[in-house]
Length: 117
Image (tube, rainbow, N blue to C red; front, side):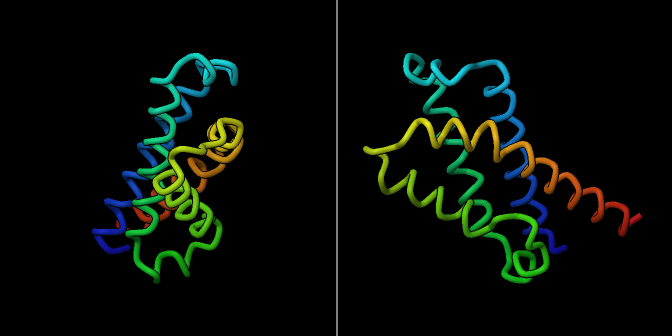
């Protein structure tokens, strides 16, 4: 794995773990009354998508278990259609899609470090 991909994957994993922390200490209804929570989750999802878009094509091709187009598409939607963000989608992404992403990214890091020991 090239160093740039490592950096991008670290950004993705850090943001995903932060999303998970926020989601675990919240409920869906919190998004209706806590704009800071909404802005935090949205920004972290944007970071994941942007970092995903900056990874090499080779990495994306070699790791199909990560939904690269979905991550990138979500970021683009959040950035360009900021005025019509669906909070149900933000919540379901944060609570249902982020935990498996953390698992896949962690596996990728573990595999990389095992190969470089």
